[in-house]
Length: 340
Image (cartoon, rainbow, N blue to C red; front, side, top):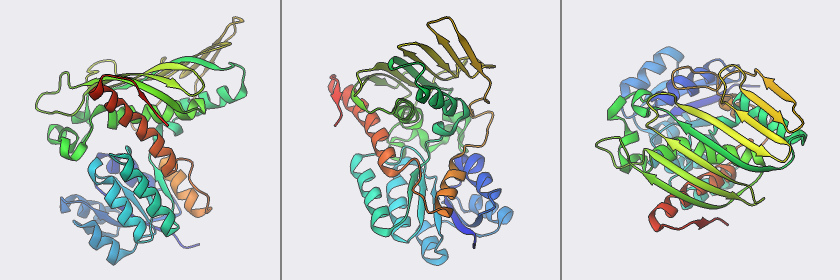
């Protein structure tokens, strides 16, 4: 079959480290366009991989007519770019958080449905080897029901990751809308929903800007979640873990405990109540400093090639987003928020 013609909108760090290199080595893909308001960035990738460079994504959609688009823009543009791409007949892979409001997420899902294209959200934590192994163990049933949990994601902040360092859009509220919760918290709301095959029923949270100067986006959040199954746990997102950053989850279950990402050598550890200890070396989680293949791009391409809806649909992204939006509502109202 002919190759899938892919355009990348937004040529910042997530494109540089994940989307572009992973598309470039996928045998089913031809990179045909790169878009960035800083045109030189787009031109650099076009020179390297072929395709055309644009400053305006709408012009690109009308001229190039790509088969698929990766949306790697600041958060406030995710919805509009995704909707415009879907209306142009392109499959859409959008970075997380998929949108900044539930209304935006609903409109994105509707646009994809109306145009007969796929909408996938880039929740890469589902594809990390330790999380895949954890899911497999949970589904085996030998740990029994998850009773309580904690899941956290923290690092030193986007200034070490973003192509614009401290001048990054991540710190500008009109463009980012949300800070550590949109960057990291939504990864964990998605992960816990997926790992537990469960939905969040209620959220209570404290969210604030504790240490990042000159910005009013959140740099820390601590949330308590109650799941529909009754399981309760905590979700932490932080941009101020200047040492010892964390991407770990611990699940206390009827028959034992599972540690995910707590040990540098054994990425998954299961300790059963009968005294058995199982240790799994399955490969480390990707970090900002040490990139590994995300799995997201290959999954997106495979869904197009096989005409199979992606694992992380717009509906999935919307449910994970709504947990984060409820957390912000909890912070602003001082009460716990029930989700539908």
